[in-house]
Length: 149
Ligand SMILES: [Zn+2]
Image 1 (cartoon, rainbow, N blue to C red):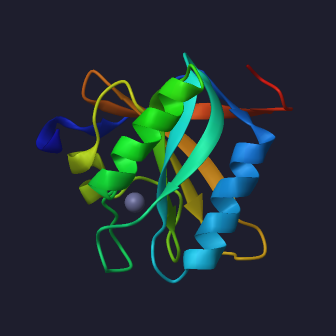
Image 2: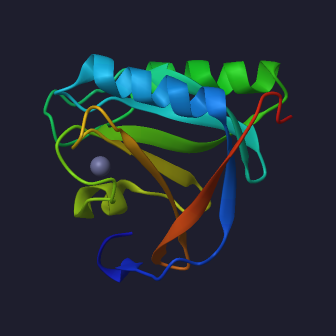
């Protein structure tokens, strides 16, 4: 992606996320802080039903890279559940839940990106984005009770 990526206004589009997914992402972010945590999101269409933890292949506190073995394991888990990998999540232990320039460079199209910010650890904040036509678009994140699928 890189240079062409711009931040667009909220598109009004939504992604539906099971409450258990939100809880799982926040728990993972808190456990791994001050390092960034990361994981993959399983679902179908615009619904996210499951968060799968992956190891962060980057040792720092401001980047993430999903461990390739864990990525394959998540693909197998998705298939076994009749789901697809529809997105990824990671944490921002000390910054707002907004994609960094590096996040945008690494991002792929038609994938949801959820970011958990721990700026206020007592009140973690989760936001959702997707890349479409070179734009990084914030999405409305609607939580849905289990089961969503
Ligand atoms: Zn990030």
